[in-house]
Image 1 (cartoon, rainbow, N blue to C red):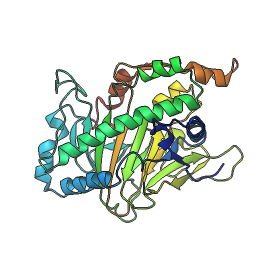
Image 2 (cartoon, rainbow, N blue to C red):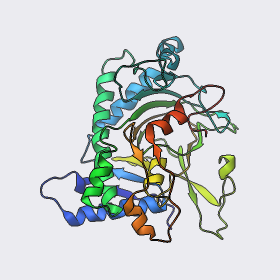
Image 3 (tube, rainbow, N blue to C red):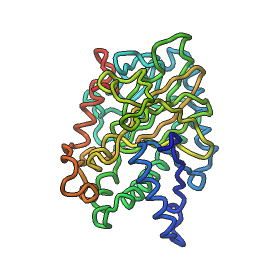
Length: 343
């Protein structure tokens, strides 16, 4: 298996007329292979968005993170539900170590906000010209892209139209998350990470990053008997696995996409949510969008995945209600040294 992450062109699913069935099939097959082998891939979106738009988002993020600390603290997570708002440098912890980044987090707005309830507060936007409008416009674009990629993946998995409709009903009101993240350079000889090794816990992540190389690293497991091994920085429970870290450097016109733990359940283990980490030696700004299931979605193994596995396939994964799963993950963020990605 190649160690280079595949580049997948989603454009056949962007064109409604004429529909190129063969091209869509090829895209779906490429997505299926990428999810089986990597859990990570590049998604070419040049026909979907003007590449100047995400550049504007990172410029706005850079402007916000350059503000005086007291100005940024006015949007502190503690003002709301400890999930929406600004997190200081090293405020979050992964695998027992402080992450060397600061962030500004937004979630899908909720009815009847109540900041005393985890995840149920209100988003906090900086008072910077154009910030809210441009970030909310990007959210709308990424929600559309999420549904497009989900449909393409459903076809790649062999789902019937009725099965796709049922799955679509679980993600059509996505409880999305949007982040702006600022990474100062790691101190020399640091044994920490800008963001420690973790898996994303939702559905699909679309990451736009500035051109800094060798920052995002993906852990690829190697076949049994392989001598390749670089397990530095892995969570303790993962450290015995043979594998190696590869760079997922930004490619112009693409977002980096990876699948989260919900796709592990939907695919009954066929697809794996892949460990990744961030190691920055220079300043960097990233804008990840997390396309997630609906808050009340009942996520369970899909019949199409079990058809692929056959009667003697893998044991059925435990189903979850996404909102309950999410609350268990982030309901106590930043409290008592527990991090966003810790179990």
